[in-house]
Amino acid sequence: MTQEPRLVEVRKNILKHNDVIARGLRERFREQGVFVVSLVSSPGSGKTAFLEKVLTLLSPHHHVAALVGDLATENDAERLARSGAPVRQITTGTVCHLEAAMVQDALESWNLGPLDFLFIENVGNLVCPSSYDLGEALRLVLTSVTEGEDKPLKYPTIFNSADVAVVTKMDLAHAVEFDEATAVANIRAVRPNMQIFKVSSKTGYGMEDLLNFLRSSRVGSTEVVVSSKRS
Amino acid sequence: MHELSIAMSLVEMAQEEAERISGQVQALHVRLGPLSGVFKDALLSSYEMASFDTPLQGSQLVIEDVPIVIYCSQCQVERTVDSLQWLCCPVCSTPATQILHGKELELTSLEIVS
View 1 (tube, rainbow over the protein chains, first blue to last red):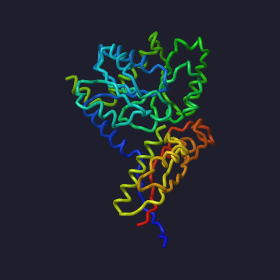
View 2: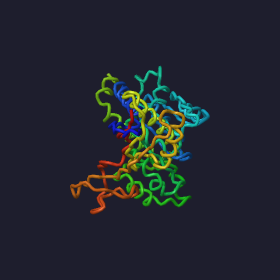
View 3: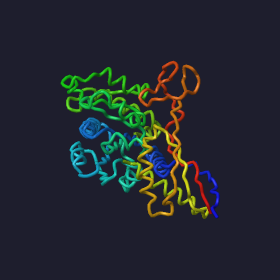
């Protein structure tokens, strides 16, 4: 005799496990007054060079650190360590994105208290990282001028999941005939009103605006904790 | 290809629920939005792999596509948007800043026999 199945309501976010960990991380970051910024982009768009520059420019005035995700090798962590900031590598093996639990594990026994900024560099991938909350306060999506103008249209979800777009390698814009107006229009078509920064990690172009934005975002998000840390 | 790890979470969630009420899962109903970052066909094939050799092997994954719904601040009304490449009100073209639906990645219900 075949039995009629009964419908049992569940209503659960499939990524609930990740979201619960991410919420815990966000709470921990907030309590400890560390402003966490994650970076997503395709491979080769200049995330590591950008982060190297950001760490170098911020470190004389702020306590900064970074976590870097990669499928394999510790090359990026070694490069970033040259900035003098503490850096930890997360090697994901075959996993194409970072998950909140990986961040949690990597931060184990790390005293975040003295930090002002923590940067998390995701695995180079414009698809998978978009689904995973890492507990960050701000997500930057990077796109380089050498990739052309239509990356946002091809990967709308990741642009939509990010808070701010950063166009990198602006020093090469002229050489590759980068059409800035089209790129900006494409970004805003998939993420209306998105704030966009144009930078060159090589020449430093645009970095000061970006750093000012990071500093003011941090103060805005952790005002109470920041003032108590300074006193 | 993160759909496999998502399919594995699905198997785990469904199995937990089935054990809790001592039943066997025949089908899973999932709501999926285009802004979830998950591709339907990849999730379907990943589910077969993830459920293989588990009590859920042979169960059916039923995916309901959730359209993107925005609130247009100009028209002051909810509107369905067809394109991920143009997140604007389809009537007045105002850029959409409030996304109400489209990010869903949700297990809504299970069909269970005891």
